[in-house]
Image (cartoon, rainbow, N blue to C red):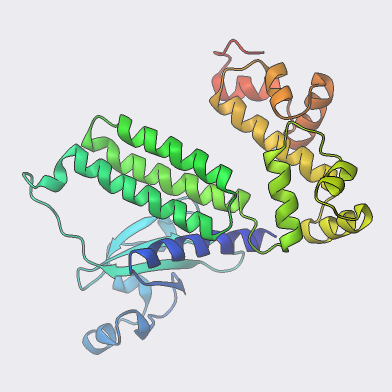
Amino acid sequence: MERSRIDLVIDFATQFFSELRIATRCAELSGEWDDSFDLGLRKTILSDQTYIDRTFPEFDPCNLSENTIALVQDLFRCYYVIIPIPAPESSPGLFVGPFVLNQPTRNSAIDTLRDKKNYLIIINTLFRKAAQRAQVHPVYLDEISGKMAVRIEALNSVSQVPAMQREMIRRYCMLVRSNSTKGYSPVIQEVMNYIFVNLEDDLSLQRIAAELTMNKSYLSTLFKKEMGMTLTDYVNRTRIKLAIYLLNTENMPIQEIAQWCGIPNLSYFTRIFKKETNMTPSQYREMITGGTRDGS
């Protein structure tokens, strides 16, 4: 399952850069250079340097962690984006490029804040399209793209733009990794989408099967087979994910959060929250806020 999630992130990045007509390839960070990167140009000019890390003189693969993305320049002054791919016994990466970055002059119009915001709006749209291709539910897409649009317009300095770019990349990748339904059967995709839209309602196996006109036993068996967990466990996990999101973004009392997540019984909500996170909702809120919020 984890491997498939990694594949989803790779697919998302590949689809995004394909929208920009920029090539992507997976390769070992410490492996030999592939002539397909530059149609043999590098091999012709520098036949004695055959490894990827030697092609990027200022890049050290050892400094590239799972949670970082590198923008590096090769020996031909072309740029690549390198995205690490978690793997147990190797160090593969997704290479994006080559492309050329034109450094604008100080007085160039591209340096204006409005132009930077317009650029981020375009990026936000492309990210949304790529996440949509990964079959993320439209409700998630509307929420994240809307929030990103608001934050883009709230920028008041050009210096804030790079951090915003990194935040958009991180959030969209996390969205695809956590909420894509790609790879599941149409039946399970329908069930997952129904659960998300109706988290406040009764989501028992019997109710879901009736609403989607499915046989209860068939649905239970198929869901366990594809998801590796029971439908009830998946519903609880999805509700707790929403609770974690609300605890991070809202100042609502925990009782109200429990109701929003479809678990009005606070003691039961606390029990399944602790089962998923190893702490109570109050402990989680204290951890992320340092005890500065009033909600309890």
